[in-house]
Image (cartoon, rainbow, N blue to C red; front, side):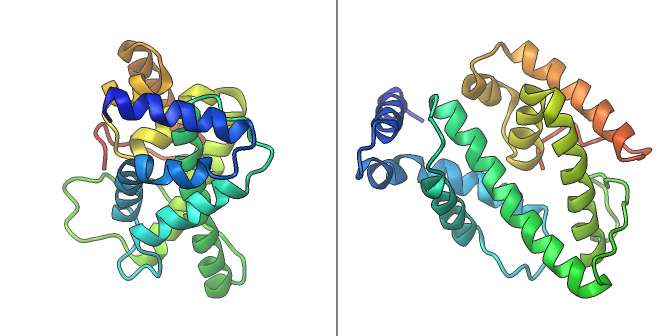
Length: 202
């Protein structure tokens, strides 16, 4: 994102905070490509034939952000973090609904699978159960380690590079790297998995 666009995003978020009824509408074109990139990375992790498409995921997430009347935007880092979280919540809601239909609400935890080197794609059931297990663990993790959880959302789900996450969160890249390494270990243990989270964005 260009410096001019970055400043425009910040300015419009401040206007949104101040009750400008047109700020959210003017903001959308400036953030759309970034949000679409996040959505595409999310959808790459989903099962084939998912009823949601990345464009629909962007619009549904944006509508949720617009409807979040109590949010006081703290800047673009805050905005993109909540956008990534909104997308995750939408996909988790879809997964939860399908699991309910399939199992009558029973959930089964499974280990995260490595993104590279899979001989065959994970089954639809594995994808949904894996997402639910990771979401549960990440919610617990965020209660104690909020910034590290943001790193997981932006990297593991959003596919962002370390330097970009550092820019969004306004911290040093080495801090992001430490947060990511710590989060991998914590989440692996919380999920009872013998496998590590992938080292690269998916």
